[in-house]
Each structure stands twice: as C-alpha cells, then as structure tokens.
Length: 232
Image (cartoon, helix red, strand yellow):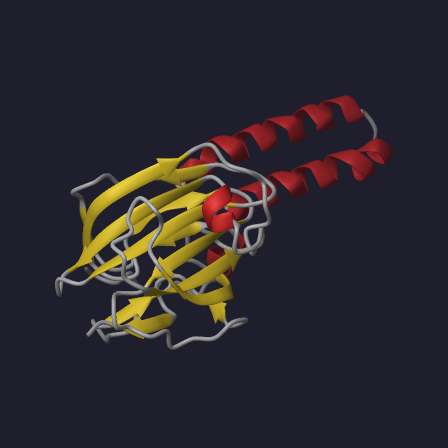
C-alpha cells in the first residue's frame, strides 16, 4: 500500500482530514451554533454564547479527525489499532464467541475523548469472524469487566502468515456507539481502517499464540505506528 506524503503545514493541524462518519455530527453542531448566533442578537451575548457554541462545533469535527499514519518498514510488526494509552496487559482466552481454549496475550488500549477514534488493522489479514454485541452496560472502558459487559464488536483475523489473532472494539462510559466498517471474509491491509468508536472507548488486541507484548501499561499508543509485538 502506497504511503501518503506527509503534510507539515499549519492547515493540516488546524483543519485535519475528517472521517465521513463525523460530517453529519459536525454539521449538526454547526447548525446549533448558527441558531445560537441568531438568537444572541447582541455583541455582549455573542461573546458569552455564540463563540463557545462554534468552538464546541469545531471540537466535534476534531473528534472525528482521521490523520494519515506511517507504519514501520518491519512487515512482521503488529501495530496498535488505536490511539490512546495501554490500560491492561493480561494473558487470557479470546472472547467467548471466538474462544478456542488457548491463552493469548491481550493488550488493551484506552481512548479518551481527546484521542483519534478511527481504528486500524494491526497487521494484514482476513476477517474470519465478526460478532457485534449491541446490548451492553456503561462501565468505564478502562476496567477489565468492560470487555464482557459493555457494547462491543469482536473480530477473529487470520494474518498473512497463517496465525490468527483477535480484536475487540469496546464502547465506553460516555456513549456506546461502535461503527464497524468491515465484513466477514474481507481482506484488509496493515493499518487499513476497519471502524471507529464514538466518545471514549477501548480496543483490545489478542496477540497471536506465542507472541508476547513488547509494550507496558501506561505507554502511549499511536494507531498504525506503535509496535505491540512481532509475528512469528
């Protein structure tokens, strides 16, 4: 996959590329800000209400920002699927619907509302199974029980070297809306986008059998760039 050319301009930082999922939310926020501006009626009211309303609309657009990413040349590297900070590293089985009785290292990346929420493939592979669990609770996504209680979407992926691994999108405390953008049988390239989660959430990566995590709790992750481990 051809890598994009880096853009170092100020425009790239102030007006980043927006994921299509965020266009409608940003448009709604702009409409609300415009209504507030009309109702304000005076310079005094404009300062107190309209400016914050437009800043909030700008914040909504930024939440759905979707910047380009630049993976390392190491093709065996398994990359973080999400921006954020590692909150858990545990050895456990795959989610119930994907479980095969084997133990895998699970690396959990917590995303706050300030992180990019577009999710990317850790390594190239085929989606063998996809399971969306809509009914869920509102536990903080950084807690271990969120992986079994909150709204989530589980994926079983077969890497190009034949190893399988799991990925789970977990909705968080503020909102529970996962937007998966791939289907079973679909083949994806490394760092290709496969979905997003709105307003605070978590990504779990179940590393292939025999692969140990090369990161630690608290470490900051960059989707499509930070190495979690290496394929055998």
